[in-house]
Image 1: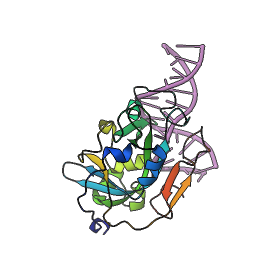
Image 2: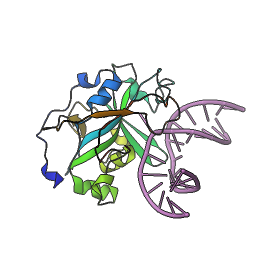
Image 3: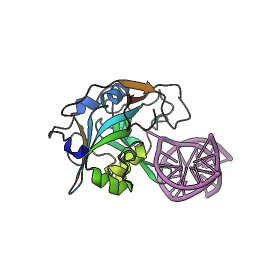
Image 4: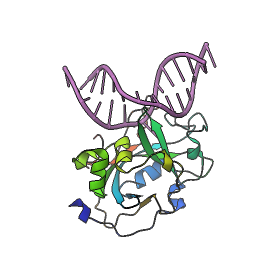
Length: 202
DNA sequence: CTAAAGATGTCCT
DNA sequence: GGACATCTTTAGA
């Protein structure tokens, strides 16, 4: 049923969308469509929860102590996917922000599935739509995102990109503290759509 | 080289 | 609310 809510074919956001303050991009990504193109399937979801991670000024960020092999894409050109592996089993998806040379990324924490739901259910091994992508590692599992997409250019409209929602409903943005970090816990750089049931934690 | 933590999810109590 | 899976990265000796 939710598959009938389709988006029009729309262009991926240009690099200028990402080449801005990370916190601002984190807010503006809410309500936008995350698109994953597989060989025979199209997966789409409305982004409903994000977190901003910056650089030297953000002790919770992977980029805080400077570039490493893992985080190098955070220092590169904006508008690329930063996918990292954690806890020995999970992947998390970020989009890079800020001008090249200046680190920044937005963690995509949750999405509301709108297309390819059957495929997502298979990948997540559940029939509960609310459990498909309400968390960063659940989302990457549902959307078939692994480290092979690390560094992928999101402005090309190919395997992975973000685009406009055709007819968005109005929503309110709520900010809160970021989840799962132990430093810089006071910053309210987590953003989510108020009352949306696909957010990981209200 | 060694060790601990990790932008998490799942299952159990 | 807590244990645990599982392994890469990073920090520190």
